[in-house]
Image (tube, rainbow, N blue to C red; front, side):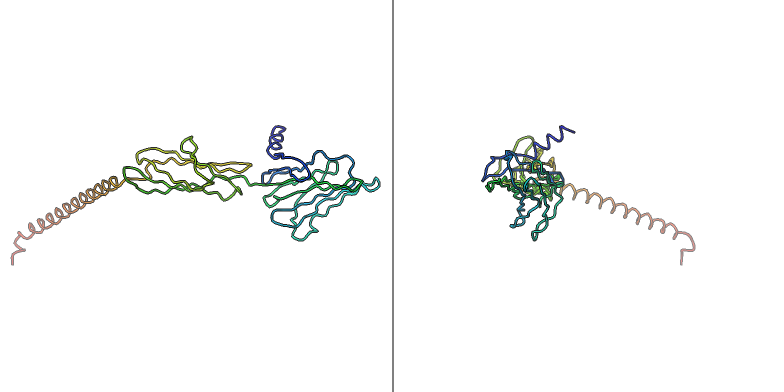
Length: 270
């Protein structure tokens, strides 16, 4: 359990340069807790408060405020008093001013600012740039074929996912990465109609990845293959027609022969 917690913490916190004008970059998984723990804070702090600016909202949300007024500590929760401010389940620790998002969601992504003042009135900030991502689901991979000359076919592969947020796409032929410009959801390649080809689409975001592979075998046939198949089917149809025709003629001949035998008795004579 401890190993999982440490692994998750290392994944969650990707620290950037700290300072007055920079922010720590925090990456989280949807549905998992996210801790925003400031470091290198002064010990002599008069007041502190958390401000949240979601990507979906330009206004700040004030969630927790703390003050040490004449030795009396006061903590107030003000979440939801700002119009259009999201309502989340948050916890605040006044010992080290850590803010906990219990079950983070992609809409919780944004800028989180811990603002604190010293007894002299100096204001400082500690910023966190928070990005929450869904886990990437297995992508849907679709193939289309086009016949070219010389036993070559053009295959078009389309890769898509419905969850995962801002994702990156990578294409592989076998175990080799295909170098294509940009972040392409579609791959166009030329293959030998008689060959076996394994293609893989890998989709990833900063917290997870998923892939889908297709073994391309008989997806494309040449014009000669189609001609041979057409002739073969035509011959089979002709043979079946000849068999049915012969069987019908034999049935009619046999029926007429029986009638002819019946007519030879005396009662058949006028």
